[in-house]
Image 1 (cartoon, rainbow, N blue to C red):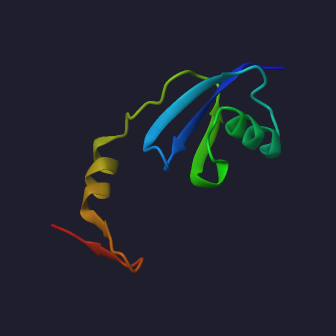
Image 2: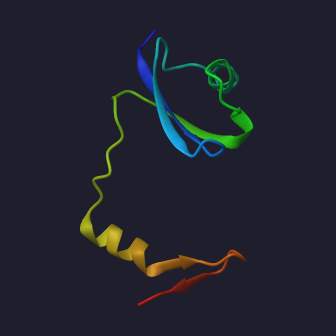
Length: 82
């Protein structure tokens, strides 16, 4: 078993949570049960398992500049802004 972390984006609450895992290699069903056991609604969450604690937002400048120029419309189409 390898320890790790699970990061959960809970859309019902509007917060991000991170928990330590005893086994980072859990199956999807086990992860979803873990999420439910922590009091989250797994059907309204996105999650990921990873080895290191914390979440980094360290993107190259050209990536962040490109992301700021894309506007996702309500109908799913994209427009380049600016």
